[in-house]
Image 1 (spheres, rainbow, N blue to C red):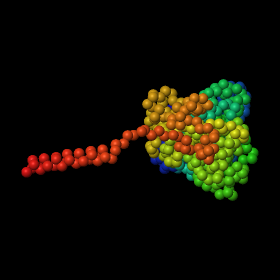
Image 2 (cartoon, rainbow, N blue to C red):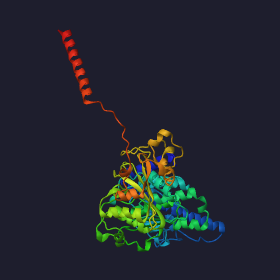
Image 3 (cartoon, one colour):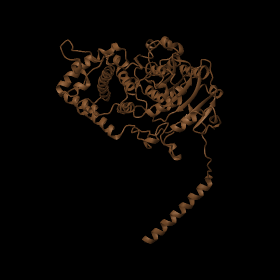
Image 4 (tube, rainbow, N blue to C red):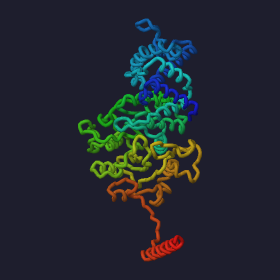
Length: 512
């Protein structure tokens, strides 16, 4: 958790960009990402220097080459620790004309970050703004992994505008709920085919660190954690850069974050590769058949992106793999042939575990669309006996565009630091949803369909044409109300009319 003082420092950096002429929040984040990457390169180089000095050996891996460039300018000048003390005009020239061109040559080292920096653009407009931002970033403690990660998440929270192609940030507490429900392990290969800022991958990494601390100390598992556990795809290069930096600042050294149009490219070489998928894919409407992967068209013939992404998840998961994905409500009850076929596949061919209906304002102010979390396991041999349904009516924040917290910070999220009092459940359903999810094969089976969660047998779902909307199965108890007879009501009206007439007569007598 970051302090108010650190938040105010970030706010001041943000304000400096705003007053300096950069008002697009994505551009602000992008420029800060570049500067943080430049700072990290210097930190890596310093670590290598210190190691070489301790061992009395030459440096094994230099970030900045020795000597000078072709214009006899020292490569050492490109280091954050060197240029941060320069005069603003000199710093502006070094960063804009030398450091950024140098960044674009780094792709050869094979790291995710270097690859995404190859088209880095420096858009800070003047020396004064650059000097202010470099000075402010220098005052922020970046040694602690948790602080670095939380600071970057706080900055990402300032991206308050939905992007193109249906992009919007998934609230962190919804991501946490989905990660807690799927419980990633150190052996998982986790994929988000529409990763954006990599929020799901970051949270999965934090969960593994927290619940399996020994995994980071085992050499093989540590290598897997840093290099082959996390996979994210996106076709927005800005998002790829931001997502890569988000993973880096959360302590994942070289995740597989790469450019890919997940719906357009064939997934033959990726089929059955991942054991866990966490995603909130864009619901952009329709694609034309020509631009859609033929692999996916073989699973389900449709142009709707939300259905194509579900087909993609089924292709990417290995048998036994599990998924927690956000879908618009239309997926649950849509009447088209493609909608019904996909739901039939989830129920009959795979194991549909649960459906969590999210509050209708969960994605405000980005979007007002009603959504649900689908949880399923790929088996290729069925296995659905009962489907667990949960209706979340509150997630801890107000459901209007302000999305103000309804409880103190320690009582928010699916795993609050302080247990909720009895009356506070109505403001935050997520801890209750998580507890009930792990009991879905136990006492949850006995719950009545009038309750907040309940299980529905597979036979009932088949009978309803594979409809997965919670309202189809929820029973509403109407309180019995006694209604008076019309004659009794008329008698009361006549009595009241008589009293009114008498009152008016008395009043006339007083005025006469």
